[in-house]
Amino acid sequence: MARLLGFGLLAVALLALPACGSKAASGTGIKVKGTLLQNGKPIQPPPKEDDALYIAFLDPKSSPGESPAYYNHADGTFEIKGPLGAGVVPGEYRVVVTYTRYQGGDDVLKEQFSKENSPLKYTVTDDKEQEIVIDVGKKAVTKVR
Image 1 (tube, rainbow, N blue to C red):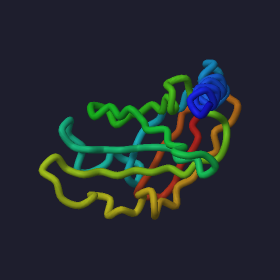
Image 2 (cartoon, rainbow, N blue to C red):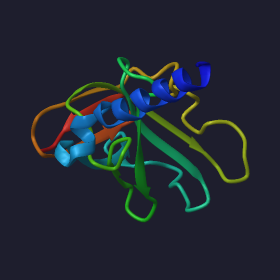
Image 3 (cartoon, rainbow, N blue to C red):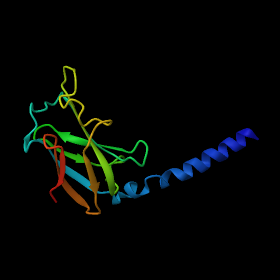
Image 4 (tube, rainbow, N blue to C red):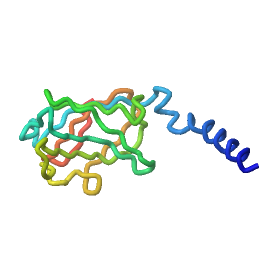
C-alpha cells in the first residue's frame, strides 16, 4: 500500500513539473542583454577570460529564483537567458555582480553587489528584448532600449 501511495505521489509531482515556470519555459520569456561599466567606462581592471565575473538577476519571490548572465569578456557585454534558457519572466529583480580574479582572492568590487549587499534593482518589462547598462561605479541599472 505504501509503495502504491509513493508511486501515486511521484506521478502527481511529475505532472505538476511542467507547470512550474511555464511562462519562461514556453519561450515567452524576455531576452535581456547589456553592458557592464564602471563610471561610464569599461570595468577596470578589465576581466580576463579566466577571471570569475558573475552577473545575475535574483527574483526575491521564487527559489532559487536566479538567472545568471553569460558574460563576454572581449567586449564587456552580457545576456541573461533566464533559468531555463527561454528568457526572463517580467518582474522586479535584484542585480548581483561579483568579480574575482583567476588567482583567487577577494571580490574586486568588494562585495558591494553580492547577493547579500547589492542595492541594484531592475524591473523586466513586457518588451520582448531589453538592453540595459549596469554601472557599478554609479550603482545604477539603466534601460537603454
